[in-house]
Image 1: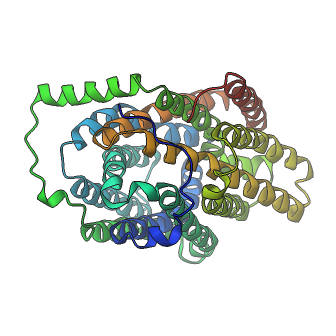
Image 2: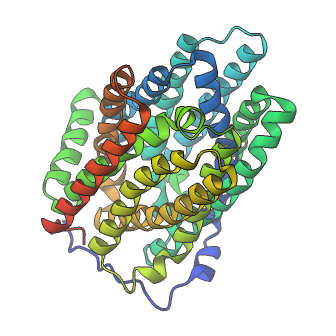
Length: 421
């Protein structure tokens, strides 16, 4: 492997240089379209699952199942994608996801949707995403100069988070006026829009001749990716860190509706407040990251972000003691979500940038797929455990426990001086 790239941000590079990268800006536009639909759907889907089942255990179960294809399919998908046209894969998988989400909305209108159908659609969608992720990672070096990675990745995160804010702000009105099915149809339309934009991105792959892959070549490619990661301690540390962070995020992602309704005793508006504030924080943090990275080390960024994420859970549950003061609960949840989102953006940006800088282009799809699989493998496991625990423990106890575990984990990561750069 070539010498590890320096983590310093080039002082002569800025956002204006990224805007000149026309093909990358097309990809950002596709991501913006996608994120707008997802932001509306995130609230609608969370409420839909809980409305259909009335069960916190079902919410956690569906969230966990959604991650299974990533774990088992993505490492194999990454090796396959390495030798295929990445743009074509991105377009096809967006179309598949658009069809599935449209079907969910239609079945909801016809009152034929049930938790098992929703579970099946979730598996198909996440299976398509198992191919979409590695393709998107591998196409990046073809359309963005390496010198622009810090600001390029930050710009993508910032703009998509701004659009997500708009989606979250409109979500309540769309669902309230037009119904949940309309919100889901909007999400479906954004997948089609994303596919259309990606069709017009020039990646240079059109000139490349792709050879047919036999079984031996395929497994050699897969084995090469695994061997590459095993030799790179920094990537292994990335995976371990992401596993810890993703495990801690599970209760928030899978039990948000029960948290708001049963613990905080608030209506659906608080889901929008939480989502809006987190996204605003993510947007601010993404925009500031290139400048923060000049002044703070990666390990300091990771410790600060991880500790805030862990304390965030405890703050949310403590807010339940003043649940009768709705405005105050909203302010506390909004402020803590904003700060958490900002610091979480620093951690995510640091990991993404360092990954892109430390992995050779020829290994990006494979390494990215294996890393993604490793990163999320804790999520279904934790989700299944939580779905069982909800039968015996209050949701508040689960949040307290995960917050405490997170504090211990990130302190250990810092004390052990794990290498991230």
